[in-house]
Length: 251
Image (cartoon, rainbow, N blue to C red; front, top):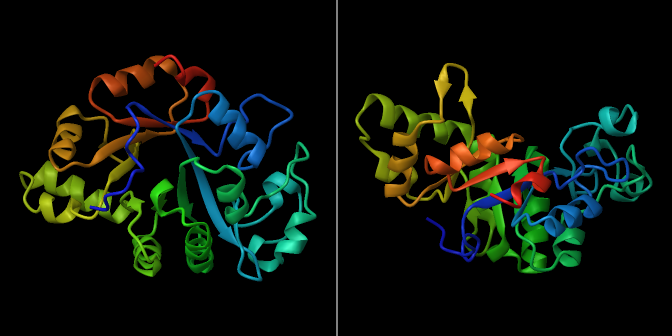
């Protein structure tokens, strides 16, 4: 397991899902303004997404294309960073680079989901250039992308398991009495999970306790109901990923 200062703050861990833009016409998701708003509301972590431009700059944007948020029929990977900077989001916000966010939000902790293969090395480069290893968690739905990023970094960073990791770990817990859990979790700091995945219900106190025995935190996403937040924390979850940072401040 990577040992950094990433999880040194007290629990519960509140991850602001793409920053805070809920019901605020002045804020766009995954922008510096949304990140600052989330931090001001008490979020300890910013959950965000990394794509890469045509000239290999890591930018924080969830979708592969600009249709949903900009009404532009183009992929992020088809545009240069200079062209991306000319794009305005629905509420007038701008798509930031990862490096810019790490510099301008000095000290903020980011949970970075690498969304595409071409974003691996630009994400690594931004982390290296800003010496931000201690304040980032690198994740990806793809274990290949996650592993490639971790291998390319010069220092350890926190990481959460890919979905392939999650399913292996769950199977070990649920069907094989925990056989192999130590090996499966040894390089993972956290599992970030939906409440359900197909027929699997991850909201399972025994599973959370099993992970705690192996020093692996469990965070649930995307939880926007305050009673549900409290319920998950009560059964042992270490944190939540939420759009409603405004509700999480009194957990």
